View (cartoon, rainbow, N blue to C red):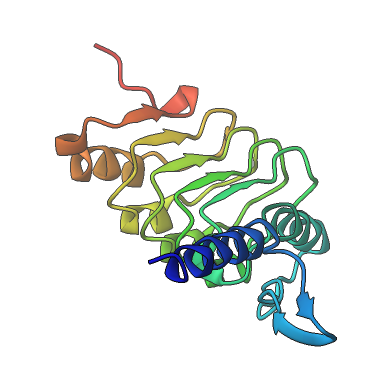
Length: 175
């Protein structure tokens, strides 16, 4: 029993050291015993400002797989396109407020999205949002040229979830 106890303690200490150093390579006697997974880079995003935002988030959160990126805040970034963002299919929360978006067709591929903020953009066609069946919060205020018909359909589709929907002023039904 005395021999096993020091081995157990040594194993636990080594495990704790490896876990706490997950972002660093660990070497023993000049032999690498652990190398962290590299940051995720297998994606192409057309809009340079969106690309910079995604790269920064990946770096800050040490994202090594596309599905690890579940929250992204790229508000006030001057983004004009979301092309390529569909690679991050696990996004649950996405904030693209105060940009210059007009085409959001790629967002319809983000089926796990629960929170989507698209305030103060130039979106006209909200139809891609009809594919987002898990939305709990959607903010579309400040999109003055948005067509309302698909928004009413979206509200019906999501009614059982009782989501918080903020529609553009001209799409709010009276009464």
